[in-house]
Image 1 (cartoon, one colour):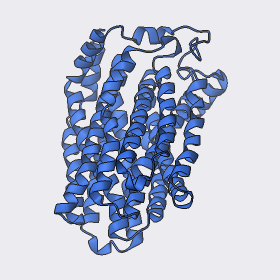
Image 2 (cartoon, helix red, strand yellow):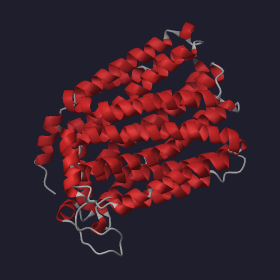
Image 3 (cartoon, one colour):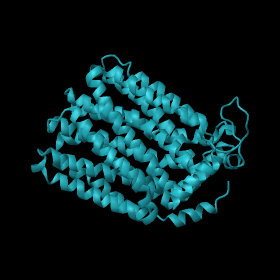
Image 4 (tube, helix red, strand yellow):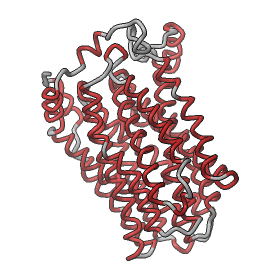
Length: 443
């Protein structure tokens, strides 16, 4: 029924205004998340697998992943700028989305210019750092725009489509990027994939947030009433507003939960290519194919099922269910070392992990958005994501150290501690109380 209404709205409106057109919102934000996924597939997955294939140590690979993960923790410094300054006549967040997308294209091209990357890990880290910086930049702007223009009752579904699209973009760029690296070399692979990122630049250029706004700075238009009312005029207002909402109990609890859960993401994403290639003898092509297939499956289910499940059963319940399943999967895998030589068993584990990883991300993002106050949405949501990425970077950096002092099965059992602790904190979040507190806030 909802799908029919969305199609009806789209045919009725026939406009390019995100606030008025649900279908256009879903397509736009999905495309922008694909643009984030393409460089992430190369930097976080293809390059580590390529380095592992060329006998780089776990410590070197983990250091690379940890460094490129750092800018995602800096998002909290970027978000207040976006809440304070903008070209309001073009929308609250759209100008920042365009700028971030442009920086992402330029930085992604630059990593292909690193000379002899296998023997120049410092240069590779620097280039990867800037890709992550502009990826994080674009991510903050996009998430802020989502909270501004997507109604609360559609945010879970939007998150499902967005995160699913990002994972599919990541998986396909890993698969295609690995093939191109192996056949044509590092520089050609990066340049080829940059074309896709550049093409997506057209999406925010042609679509306005609200009716009456400018398409570009030199176009005709004016700020919308909604944007003008939500825009904060001073740093004092921003910091006071952020402080009000960040000290709420549920905000603090979600912040702790996201950083702990992020540690699990970082550990698994970094150890899998090292484990499969150096321990099991896979090639980087084999790993990229398995990761891509399993991620696309997870992404597709996430796009069409993940958000709907959260809408139907509720954020907290689904997060806890996903975390419990994840613990069972990781512990079961750790205790099944006698089956590690069976490629089908490994494939099954990776498939199930990334399926529930996708569902968990969708549920966590939707829950975080539900806790946000719209006037400082970019800063508050970024606070959650920065903590998650801080945990991810910490987890990535821990892989090398933990592997030096323990075997793979014990390392995996250490990973399972993160989702277990996350469950403990998630149980104390109260969405209704948070919303009531926000309703009583005054700018």
